[in-house]
Amino acid sequence: MTIGEPKHAFPDFVSEILAQHTHEFAKYPPNAGAPELLDSIANWIKQRFTVDVDAATQVITLSGTREGLHNACIALCPETKNGKQANVLIPNPFYQVYAVAAATVGAKPVFVPAEASTGFLPDFSGLPADVLDQTAVVYICSPSNPQGAVASREYWAGLLQLAEKHDFRIFADECYSEIYRDEPPVGGLQVAAEVGADPERVLIFHSLSKRSNLPGLRSGFAAGGPKTIAALKQLRDFAGAPIPLPLQRVSTAVWADEVHVIANRTQYREKYDAADAVFAGLNGYQSPEAGFFLWLPVEDGEAAALSLWQETGVRVLPGAYLSRDVNGHNPGKGYIRAAMVAPKQEMTDGLNIIRKHLYQGN
Ligand SMILES: Cc1ncc(COP(=O)(O)O)c(C=O)c1O
Image (cartoon, rainbow, N blue to C red; front, side):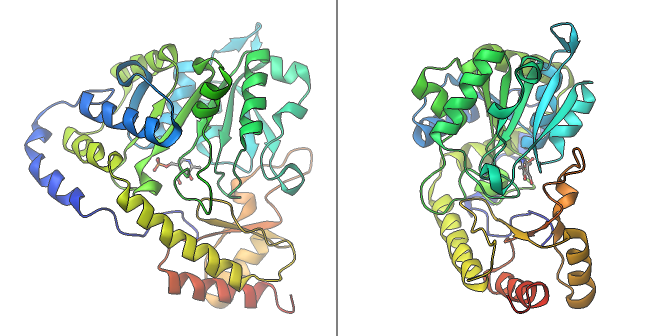
């Protein structure tokens, strides 16, 4: 239960489309994406977020979101801002590539706690004005890994206002957007359109890895303002690794299909219910709003994970492996992360073992 590798089935039609297009391995693929794929993505964005984006200028395909989340800093984070080292704001805990991207471009990472007291999302608006003025890029993950928190419309609107006021860009990692319990999470570009914010302020990242159980396909996209996308395209033209054309054909069909996404979500909803039943009555248990992780409170995450592994064989991730110590405080230290990716019964067995082993008498 350590790694968030989806295990549900991917759509049947994937193999057939791949087989039909193997001859296209003989061609160099278009760097930014074949027109059919870009159209399919733009249609999906329209359907899912009711936002019109121009497929040719506002979308770029990625070999999974991870490389895009990293390379976006190279393309878009200036070396300095106001004559000084630029800040990159990062939620704490966080998906590790955000910090690697900041390190790559020589920016200063500023870790902003996302814990129970902040609704498990970072409170960027609480930072001092001079820190925000020095900021070039803000990473935000919604639905969040590891906590499963979802940014509301108000949260997005506030962040977009902050971006305009302090002149920074938002990199919105939305790769868990299709795995949710009740309402579809709102997206950054969606709220930007609703409130009339400049689309250049927010770059959204999406992936087929979680939505469609295709982590090995390495297929995702970024969408945002035309100038932002042009900068990403320029970098990708010279230094990127485009998605092979047969895999772009597969991706075109997968973005166009929602039937398998609904079936996938149904399975995760059953898993949320199973987890809620296992942890019913547990003090501090937070049922995730979205995504497929449980963020379980313990005294010391590393000690808990080690004892769980050694004594029961169940493996989870210590929360502190996803977070940083800032001024003696580490928001991940008192947690473990359990991925709900295994088949439901296997997952439920694992969770029962966790409850029994770590929460005796609770
Ligand atoms: C928060 C978050 N962002 C991005 C990714 C990268 O996913 P991919 O590169 O498969 O799209 C992951 C994968 O686990 C993730 O958890």
